[in-house]
Image (cartoon, rainbow over all chains, first blue to last red; front, side, top):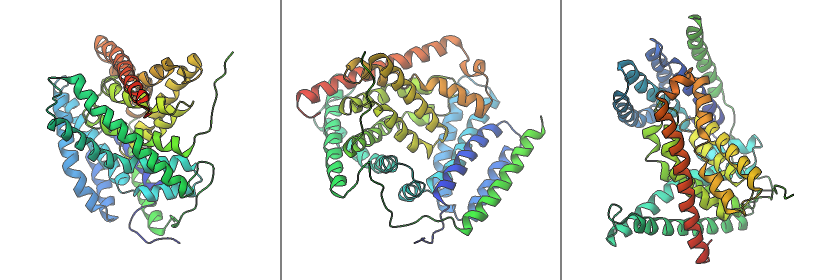
Amino acid sequence: MCKESHAIHPILSLVYSLLLFVMGLLFVKQVWFWLYLITFLILFLLFRFEKIIIKTIPFILIFGLIMAGLTIINGNKSDVLYAFYRVLALGLASILSISIKPINLVRAFNQLNIPRWISLGLLIVIRFIQIFREEMRQIRQAITLRGIRFIETPILWGRAFFIPLIIRVLSISEGLAISLETRGFSTEVDGSSFEIICFKRRDLVFSCIFIACLTFYIYLFFRRF
Amino acid sequence: MKKIEFKAFTIKDIVFLAVITAVTLLASGPIAPLVMTVTKLGAQAFAMALPFALFTSIGLRKVEKSGSLTIIGIFSGLVLLLMAPVMFFNQLIASLLSESLALILFKSYENKKAILFSAGLFSFFTIPTTAVVNILAKGRTITEQVGNPITFILFVLGAAALGLLGAFIGNKISNELAKAGKL
């Protein structure tokens, strides 16, 4: 059964994010680049992406300033500006991709008959990045408590960090594999899904406006040739 | 003559490769944003070489099956697709190139040199893909991307050297774990 939600279809979000990023990089040197950014920001606001935009803005601004700062070292004024614009293009594209719920992406992949190992692997990677961030923090804490410092004894620090980390990787992956096998997961059998990801009217409206706006900017870009 | 063998991947293999990809991405996470928008060709590969080679070599030691590196490339590429879409192609093509070359030369991952070569040169092989992507997406010529030739050569050699060093350290860690009966 289709579930009602404000999110855009995950595959559409992924494709449009890719388009926005590539086109953003192409348009970076155009005088109307700001207009391009504002147009799609308004579109995202209309489609209720405001929470993600608010979350992304500080990161993009800080990251953009760092990039611009690094470009000052061996670039001129316009290079600095373009470096900042590139980060803005990345930020714009990331709004769509951040909005995708990993589980919905996996469900959409399953509906498209993408091999199960790909969707399963993707889900594990996304989930375990957060788990291992905590594991790494705990290992680093243990190293600090033992008085081992990277600057004084880098080899000992390396051993104290990597060996426990890999042992955790091995034990977690073995436990997870057993758990998946006992639940009937296999690389050879097709899976079923509790929820169906549908293409809704909202997706159609978003697609129409998105493609119309993008076509307009592509026209503006190629008009100069 | 020995042929390249392709064995089926079990759920255990896939899970381990996915988990090792998560750790690889996490380890390279602090460096990635700093070099992501650097315009000089080879800078990203240079920065990513060590963490990528270290963890992928451990992954290949555990799952010694042809195609393991490509699977790591697909997983990391799919995650990066959500952040920087072009990186998907970068990761996929680099892993394919690196693994194909290693398997053509050494036939299987039973030979540790194959693991050293495959994992070590993974980042190095992202350089040609990055160059092509920059030409197609950003319209930047090779000369523009290379900039100072000496810096470029240093980046390329550094990416290969750091990659091989990372793979060597990864193999050392794997040896210790194998001795302890954990791998």
